[in-house]
Length: 74
Image (cartoon, rainbow, N blue to C red; front, side):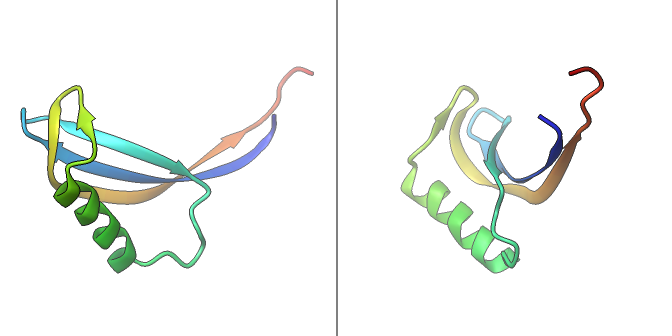
């Protein structure tokens, strides 16, 4: 399927020294860094996700990433 897709990538540090990423498709256009930080802190504080590399312990980074798909063959 050709087209562009945007993702919000949330990256957390974990208790075993690793990282864990959550990727959310098509984030709202006017998303602020404060909103993202607040959501990420809530995820860490509530301890609602256990990654294969341990509990989420902190915020590492967050960014928006895009992909473009170009169909070569039908």
